[in-house]
Length: 314
Image (tube, rainbow, N blue to C red):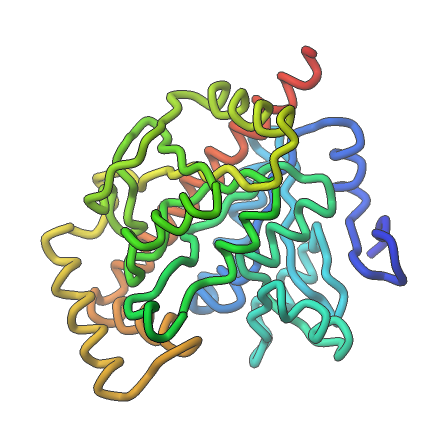
């Protein structure tokens, strides 16, 4: 694959397609790779990854799937590269702290929200669609277990479309940390913060926007002020597609009890809990995960298009 390279010897590879689109001011949306390297089972993982790219292309938006391929952080993975990563075993889950290590060792890796946001910004991409964000884990006052997503987004001026933070997290504490980090959280057509699997986590947020154009105006205002932080757009899953809210509390309680029984903590807790939820719901949580992602990819494309139109009009 040919491409433009950021400063340094192959520090970051940007595909020709993505580089041209950014240079020409056309809409581009970044997509993370952990959803298909770590988040979904095979072969559904590859199907969802390629569907997301096609969904954007059909809307006139350039997709930029981001991951680490053979040690090179890559913005705009090719179909062959996505296919190889989706089928590989033992891939690294690459957050920002891991990027230099994985790069130096020449390893494959799926990038988290933190690493994807950083690489997207380095490539000049303004919009990034994902499923759910990391945040504050329960018991963090003692364990200090907080996602690097938050600190990275506090210093990375991208726009992230998600369906909230993952339901296994302490959502109230996470929203407080977003406030501390000066990261604006804006609901898309709602003032109720979504809870990934459910439309309403039970927490209110201060602001909402009603259209991609309104979101674009907020993003442009952030950029004119030269502020360093991300803008978070909270896009709830369609209520008809959510897990029944009355079931979720029980599902989460069983997942946490099993994790405690097995002594699973730290980095191992998130994949364990999500896998437990999948088994407890007999796969329904995976269906919600995919619906969440589709909705966020669609909205990301709409916001990127509105941003490009506003910039060309100016």
